[in-house]
Image 1 (cartoon, rainbow, N blue to C red):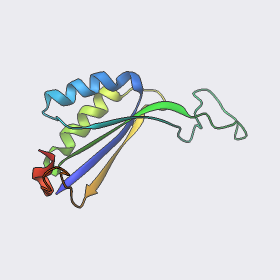
Image 2 (cartoon, rainbow, N blue to C red):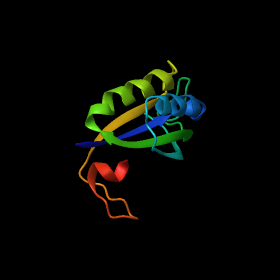
Image 3 (cartoon, rainbow, N blue to C red):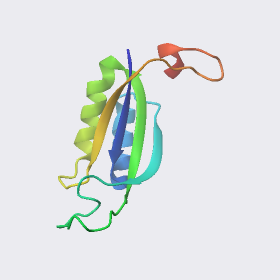
Length: 113
């Protein structure tokens, strides 16, 4: 079964994570610059519930892979994206029902090779 790994990380961690993923044979990914916040509402210090929400710059990476590679990829991302600070990010693992390569109409695993 195919899985999609979506992770939201700090922008300054992107290059290290990309290089480490390349070393474990992850060749394809989509990277998007995004903004967001968690329950701290975008503040790293004490905040009041009435404080306006600050959307902070983040990077979203998306990788579709075989189920067997998920744990290695997740551990790689987690170890390099970790900052020990609030707002370091999240990793989501989502089942992928199917995938199609637009150019050739190939479907399933072969479409992501």
